[in-house]
Image (cartoon, rainbow, N blue to C red; front, side):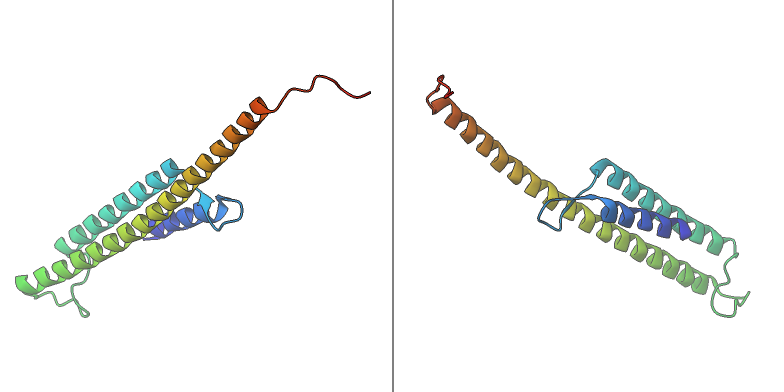
Length: 141
């Protein structure tokens, strides 16, 4: 779990330390680094889920509050199902968070593309203006 928290901190640090777009709250983030970190988070969640399943199966985790050794198979199955449901919920939350981060990145990239198109048009207009302007070879002096 500490590993997951560390990865979430790393993701947060990437966002906080990212270069800001001028005059906006948007930031530029290295998509490859973010996607690699999200992949690591998913793997860690799957690993945690597998560890929980194995621990419950071999009886390392006390089943129930008082760890009754005579729990029925149905009760054990219920505990395993609850653990799996919790792991699924954590994974779903992580996926939702990752999706939000990626959606935000997509918005930033889209805005950057629009801005670049505007800049490109300004450059074209400037060059056209320079081409149309009569050349004055005489310099005062």
